[in-house]
Image (cartoon, rainbow, N blue to C red; front, side, top):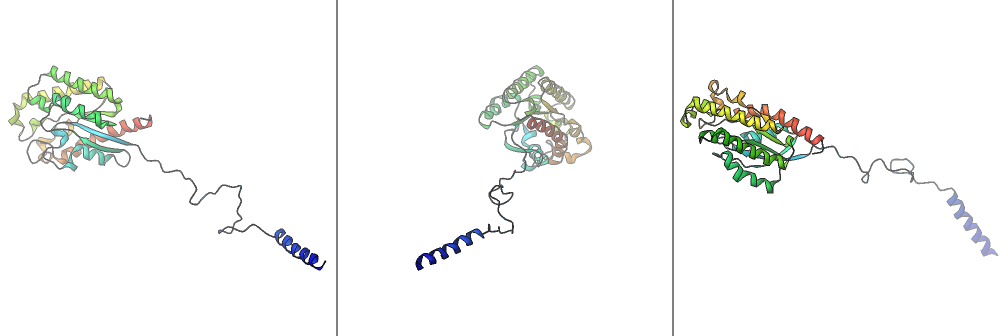
Length: 257
């Protein structure tokens, strides 16, 4: 009987201890509520800040795009990429342009490269060597149409930028490549064809002639070879090109492209 009384006494202590227990406070002093989801801590999922979509960019063309006689960072495609950041994440995946290339060369050598590169955005500047090699206007138009049709079959119109050709006859070395008056007329005629074909397909077009035509009054716009644009001239081009590309890609990304 004595053992039974002691057992009941001990049991009473245990029961009363349990009845008086409280939920332990958290480290912050607040009582934990298992029914509420945590609002902070290592396991809380937070919304990541929105980042602009990245566009893989491939540049097509001739010496004016590969930037003959200037450093790589001074080429206009490279300057364009830097200018658009951070608003537009344009990544120059490849610059396929080659010094001396014509529209026929671009069709044969550069367009096939797009199959493996699969770019999101492409620029085209081509025509000066067609002028120098006396390609006829109708043949130039046919080649340009073929180039733009190919690009249009690969991507939306707001993913293709077409840029005009500068008038090389205005440079110190320009007269070495044909009669300046005649060749200047041909450059401008070919630019008109390029614009017509681009606009007929609702592609982006930028005329850089307002900058290039300043060469006679400012020779710092010409590279050390006396023929091609300098980094300074390319910077002037980008001032015209960047707003167009920003609008094109902003509209494209907004449409889910």
